Image (cartoon, rainbow, N blue to C red):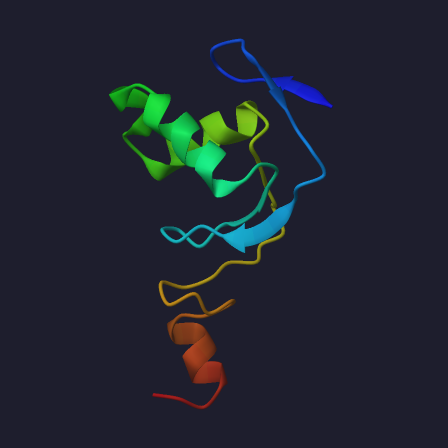
Length: 94
C-alpha cells in the first residue's frame, strides 16, 4: 500500500504495525513505519507544524505514518495505562 507524505513523495508502508502510547498526552496510537522514519518526517516539518503535539500527530496521521486509536484508552505521564489520580484511588491509593 502506498501513501503520500506532505512532500507528495511516495512512502511505502509495510506490514510494520506497533501499538504504543504517546509520551506527552498518553494517546493510544498505531505506528506503520519505524520510529526513525517518524523522527525524520517530524524533523522535516515546519516549525509551525511542530508547535504542538496535536499538530504533529495530525500531520503524521495524514501522511499515513500513524493511526490515532480513538478507543478512549490513555496512559498517564508514567506510562501507566488508565493511570492518573482516579486510577490510583480506584486501586485504594491516596
